[in-house]
Amino acid sequence: MAYNEPLIGKRERISVVNETSFGTGGTMSNGYIPGYDCKLDPNWNKNWMDILTAGADNRYIQNKILGPKALPFTLSFVPVHWKWLQFLGYSVVDAGSNPYTHTFSISNTIQSFITEWAWRHTTPVVITLTGCFCTGGSINFQKASGEGSEGFIKVNLRCFAKTYSIGSSTTTLASGDLTRTPFAWKDVLGTLDNNAKTRLNSGMIDIDNGITPEESRYCNTTADRDISEPIPGIHKITGRMNLTYYDSTEVDLWDSDAVISNCSLDFNENNTNNKIEIDFASFRAHQAFSGTDFEGAKKADLVFSAQSFSSLISTDSIETY
Image (tube, rainbow, N blue to C red; front, top):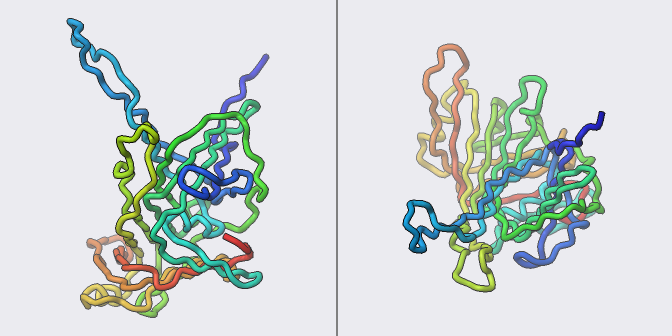
């Protein structure tokens, strides 16, 4: 009996590489896999446009023509390094010797990239997206309570691509498969008002680049149906920390109506030199309460915003980001 070989998600591989300018440049073999368990979720649309009538005596839509190409997608993965922060509007300076430091700072432009989505098979299906950019993204964490994957740090990047091609050849990456240790819940340290938050249950940081992709779509015969170069807008940093309350400390910070100094979130893989230190500037608490829960300890989300990162530095054994 002959069997057919299906396409299965476990065999897929997603890799990325920086472009040299929007929609061009970048050699895929020099690319890298952004993290473990990398998934791509597309919401792609050809946006067919209706021609309602050409004079026929019926109620059908007469015809359709191709409309603006829309290629939004989400990349999610468990991080093992912090190279991908360049896609969220940060330039980086590498320094030192092993371990190396990578100092990020806000940029007025967005680093575009190529994404290769390889559905591996005897006859692979390989989708290559060019002119990719991030409108925003988040870093999420939650304590583990048992088996499974809930305890890993998760990154979600909100992306958009200029165009795509479909081929059948998977690129061989010079960097090979991932071998680094992933970041997990036990690697998180949150600090508020210079005090370590030892009862931190979960949380997230969200970075938004203020990009509206449709602002970069023009009446332009060269661009045709494609999006053009993204326009960075107002850069916003928001987030939350879910804490178990033993007293009024966090409520008092909220009640103070003041900027809270010395606030940070650090991710340090097993207390090694594989880490990132995220310090916030102009940290403000927006919410700090939850309702009554008769059956559990008092927990609440401290929802915050920050004007910027006063310091954003990763340290690891990678020489160049």
